[in-house]
Length: 188
Image (cartoon, rainbow, N blue to C red; front, side):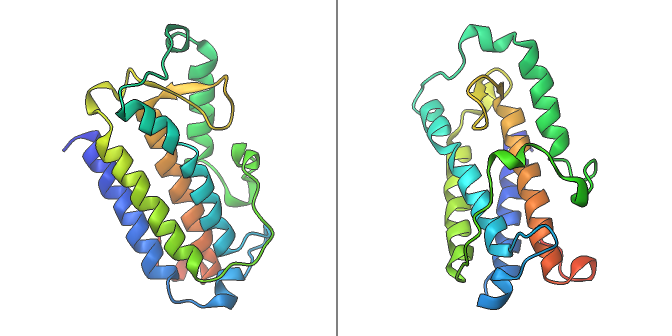
């Protein structure tokens, strides 16, 4: 299988498991907060907002546009930042309690949510999956993507996709912990 096929399979798995775990838990549980003050609804909304920041970039690439000026390809800061972001999103390397990473750039909303946030996440995830399905696989390494966190940071399309999945895995695990911690159904 190709990297993109594997990626799509995981993204679909995350969507399906999140929908299964959170679809019918009810208003109170969707808004129950963890020790960090985040609810399941806030985690899902955060993933929706973060993922949607990539939609215009992916659409531009699909339409043949180039978000990769030559100077981006040799930027030492890009290499450093990519590793920093990737490692901060790798659940194996980050303790949940100490997660003071770049996620602060995308602050949570302190509002209440209805069960419809689960459907909104599924819909957003479906669009993300469809856009990734259309991305040309031959330039996953060479195509550079501007980070939604900073217009001065770029990483390869392949690293971008890797970061998105690690981010989803991390936040879905956090949301799952609200349902009962390690003994409850694993979302990601």
